[in-house]
Amino acid sequence: MKHVLVVGMGMSGIAAAEALRGAGEAVDTYDKKQNPEYPAVVKDGRAVYDQLVVSPGVPLDLPFIEEAKTAGSEIIGELELAYRMGSGTYFAITGTNGKTTTTTLTGEIFKAAGRPTEVVGNIGVSVISKSVGCAPDTCLVTECSSFQLDTTADFRPHIAAVLNLSPDHLDRHGTAENYYQAKLKIAKNQRPDDFFVFNADDPETAAHVRALDTKAHLVPFSRKRELPYGVFVRDGVIVCRTMPCAGTANDPGFDEYCEVPVCRTEEIFIPGSHNLENALAATAVAFFAGISPDVIAETLRTFKGVEHRLEYAGKIGGIRFVNDSKGTNPDAAIKALEATQGDIYLIAGGYDKHSSYDEFIDAFGGKVRGLYLLGQTADDIRRAAEAKGFTRNVMCADMKECVERAYGDAKAAGKPATVLLSPACASWGMYNHFEERGEDFKNNAKALGAVL
Image (cartoon, rainbow, N blue to C red; front, side):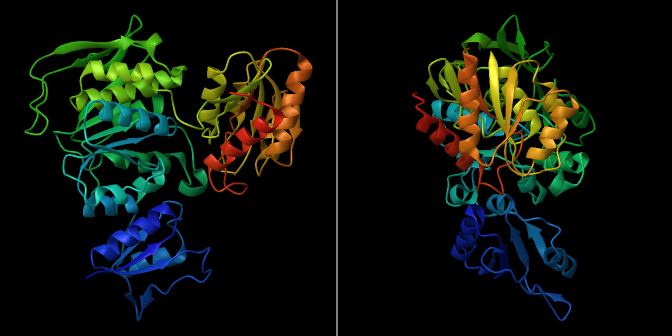
């Protein structure tokens, strides 16, 4: 019997503690919100606990965690614990942006193909709650954050995907390179019969893949150019191209070179070039998992996206309300701006992750008619905007004021427009999570009279 300390009693921590107790381990729990005093993890120079299972939101540089590690405790997270204790086959997706949409879309494709499937991870369902007790052939389509991957050791997905890499969570990882390396741990333990899907159009991703030490088959995807192997767009059609590979008993591989059309890009239901990239990634994961192109195509035609990511939240006259609360970093918010047509009245701001907002402001491109700021980063974003000559900035106390003032200005302008929430920041400090922030936006739009 191991003596385990579970650190952080959110969703994943509670699930981890329950699974460990169910397996007969001796489990203690700790959460700073419940008890500000750090637990004793070392006694007489020796580790009290064999293992610490640290929840994703808990920094790994806390003194008591470092002390436990030095004394010999193993430090892992819930994703690693789920991999060790459970069963199933992992199809893991990470990246700075697009994870939730791609993971959800991939899960829908697998379900449509009749595969036993659970969609888990950073998407809001603890991995261990589904992996323990599942059948070996269950497909665990898993959204992986950098925090989750940082605490893995043995985790091995059959198919892994990196969608893109841009600086994020610098408050936690310190440098962009540390953040990238945490993401790339997704491929660390892959074997020759596994696949590693990556975005060949993204400079950081492509550069890091070239330097990556992995045994997996590399599967690039591109919306910009034809590839000798992988998934790409040619003449407006998504194409999957394979080369011979030996395969395994569970994954027979492809006996000969072949090229298979999937569907036209204009048939994809969710709009935007970033969603085309998400669709290509999901197509690659599904196709190299052996799912029929017909099933993939039908799901791409019918999948309507995920809540809080460019979600239509109603309309008053010619003014639309769009909830992009999932835009938790500047790059994600830039993609939302690019996908939104016409005049934009933009709501932004939130928790400070030490991001730069210069490229975010550059992306306004004459479309943003007003910027409504709230949260910890409001002053930083305002200063960045003013430095680039954008002065239509309104400082707001809360979401209600943001929505009301943005709508009022849009209405006064007398033109069709979009009130867009795409914060470019995390929600912490004002909200428990981005979903709560998105609901606040939608409720305030509804209170003004927005009708779906």
